[in-house]
Image 1 (tube, helix red, strand yellow):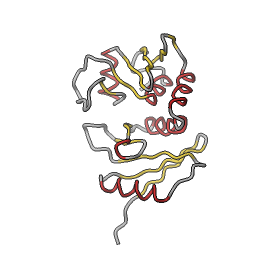
Image 2 (cartoon, one colour):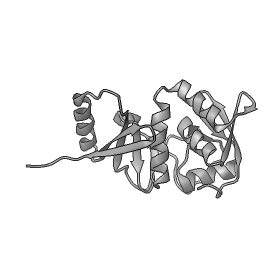
Image 3 (spheres, rainbow, N blue to C red):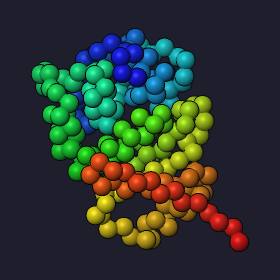
Length: 185
């Protein structure tokens, strides 16, 4: 994705970012499934939107690191590290959940919030609107205590919505993925 899209300004506002350039916004959404058109609950593929593109801070840091978007906060340009620290101040889990977000994006997956499923990410192979997300991914830090009941709950929920549960465990710059599946006897 790097180099395909010209560098664009991105406004950091609270826990979100906005890109106001319509051409780049539409390209990021329709070709790369980054962000979503502002105010649209279920945006459609192939539709040209006139409003800004709304990004999560995960997406904002990713675009900054890819040299696609330049973050502006409080009317001042900031660098990627400053943006990353700002995002970490908003979410104490940000630094390690971002590692998984970036790793999955680099592997070609499309990442959306998994909040409605009680996990960090719903992960697509093609993209929303083209398929249902086949994976639910929840991120844990390597030294985080994991309640086995929590895993069972996640497993039951993922099974009921016909998605594969994946646990991502982050240790420094290493990520281990564990996939859970149901076995019938």
